[in-house]
Image 1 (cartoon, rainbow, N blue to C red):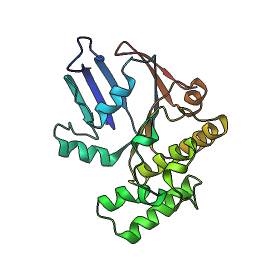
Image 2: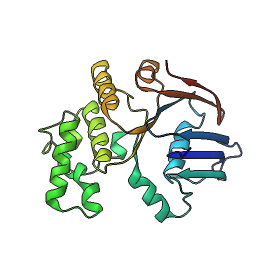
Image 3: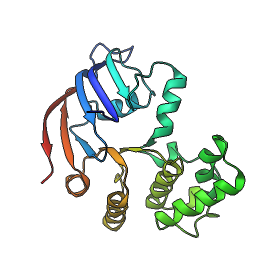
Image 4: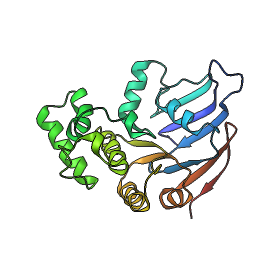
Length: 222
């Protein structure tokens, strides 16, 4: 069986720390899965997400992505084109004055024409129920709106996998339900870190629990 991601005996420790963050993680993501990672703070969940797209590199073990084992920054740039990372804090993702510019940035950066980028912006914002937001000032958006725009910037790159770090953090109940329905409507495979049990139960097809840098036995959604 081929996997979008296949982690084998992955270890990670920060250079200035004696205690490892990850201690021999084995984990796979198959096509069509929405895999939720659960576990206490400090168990290595967010670090694991960063390793998947090369924001950090394992100290031991192998990470295969889309059938290859990336090792160089060029390799990981190719991975990031196929696996879109939505940061926990939208302010780490959004940097342009307007929604249109933020969502168009990625497509323009990979060589799309202005006309093509505008079409992508319109399509993705419509998909997320954000039509009419094109000229909105990004920093003036609500927290929930910024989170949806962050997702839009990733969807604009047409990835195969979505990697989401605490996507419901600080969202109210209505916006969380809206995000849940959006994610369920998407065809993408997903890896989602979340402390929200109701959200996880709604979106997951599979869940793993992390403790002290290790993955413990998995649960399959009913």
